Amino acid sequence: MTYRTRPTGLATLGIMNTPEQVVKTHGDHMDGNDATLTVDEAHRIIGKDKISRGALYAAIGRNEVPHLKLGHRILIPRHAFMTWLQIVGRTATEGA
Image 1 (tube, one colour):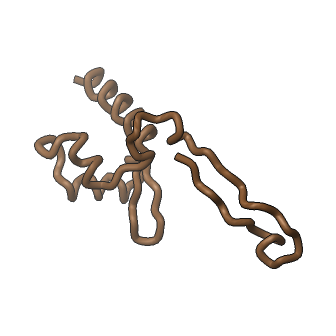
Image 2 (image 1 turned 90 degrees about the vertical axis):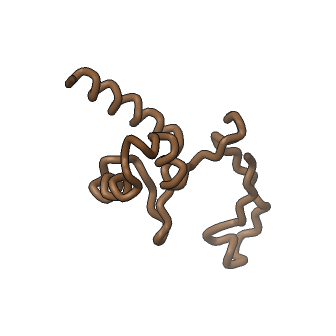
């Protein structure tokens, strides 16, 4: 995925004249999936029969699940979430 960013800082004030910058994200090398998940998408990945949606929100509120808050919106970085699931799954099986 490629984003075009607008000039920031002094360039936005017209003090410096810089062209738009092209920023390539990690998404350029991904399999077409978004880099972030919504809470509902993460809930589906975990399995709706394993945890309730409310319990997932509670875990996010306790900072147990990797997430980003943008205003009132909660986004979950896909890579961090999948890594977290592997770690939590490993811990759960070791403790059993």
